[in-house]
Every structure is written in C-alpha cells, then in structure tokens.
Amino acid sequence: MELKNQYWVLRHGRSKPNERGLIVSHLSNGVLEEHALSSEGVKQAQEAGYQLIKELAIINFPLEKVRIYCSPFSRTVDTAKAVAEVLKINPSQIQYSEHLRERYFGPDLELKSHEHYPEIWALDEYDSLVGPAGGESVADVAARLAKIIEQIETDCQGFAVVVVSHGDPLQIFQTIIKAAVSGVANYLRDGANYDHLVLSKHRTYALQTGELRRIP
Image (cartoon, rainbow, N blue to C red; front, side, top):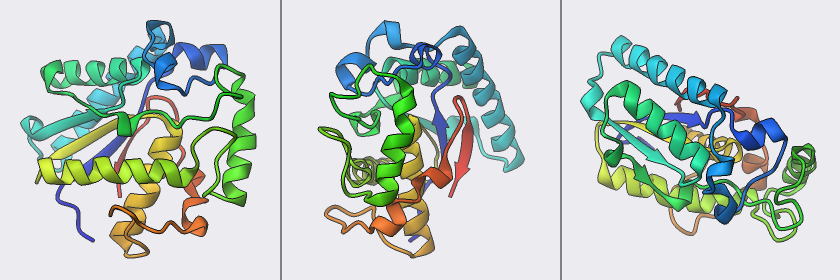
C-alpha cells in the first residue's frame, strides 16, 4: 500500500502526570488543565518543532504543506500548539480527533501509578486482542486509529502530516502503518481482522516524551 502523505508522529512533551507518575487515560481527565504539559514538556515540544523544520528543509518540503492532527487531551493540545507556533502555523488549523486520544487503560488503573504499565504491556504480548479490565486492547486502539488515517488520507494528498498523540496509540499507529506499507497486512481498512502476532510487537516502536519520528 502506498500512502498519499508523508507522516511524522510526535509524542506529547513531558506532562504533569508524567512528573507525578500517574496514569491519565480517560478523556474526561485528560482534557483537564491540571494534566497539561510541564515547563520541560513545553520546551520538548518546541524542540520537536525546530527538528521538523530541519527535516523538511533536508527534503525541500514547504512548511505551508504541513498539517497537524492531534489528540484532544490537554498535554497533546499544548504540544501541538507549541509546534504550530514554531512553524508559524495558525493554531486554528490544528485538527483534533478523539480517534487519537490516549489508550484507555480501564477504571481500575485510571489515576493510579504508572508502575502498572509493564503489567499492561505483558498482557499485550500475551494477547493483543484483549485489554485490561474495562479498558482498550491494542486491537481496539488500532481500529480507531485506522479511521483517522483513512480520514487524513481522504482530506490530504501530498502533505507532511504531524500526528500528535500518546505513547501507546503512537506505537500502535506505527505498527499498523508499517504493516500496511510493507504488505504484511492492511489494517487501515474498516473491519480488518487483526493479527495478535503483529499487534503484540507495538512496543518495538516506543517513543520518549517529546520525540518526533518520521514513518514508515
């Protein structure tokens, strides 16, 4: 499969929940200002913006053909706005989508310690089609990400698309994009049958906070 756009993924900068060691994965909590970026996270987001400018210059790609799609969580909104400011893009042009929201880890883990993450990822390795109690599986997240990719590919052609989201969703985003482009499996279509062996490797594509990466 050939994509119509060039893609960069950007994990939000270091956030206040990161500093407090908290899992904030439900939309109702994620949009709160108290869970926004830390001062360090703002700097990371700005640095990502400057990095993108350099990478686009290398391939002689015009800044006016950059589009930003973003999760509605406060930490991702802050990140996208910081990048837009560096690129001199009007913040009103940022496209927000709940399909890019954080992976919901369930009521038992919401606002609990991030030390639970290894338990979730161990479950993913065992069965990526089953999530933590009351939460989303890798396959669940892949299904909603496929919808936003389809939307972007319909809305844009020949653009540099920056996808601002969270750790797990961006790992899964990379997994399904790479599978589609390499011909392993087309997970970008509605109703796709997900393969545990492919999705369970999403941690291979882990990102640090504020990390920008071109894909595939």
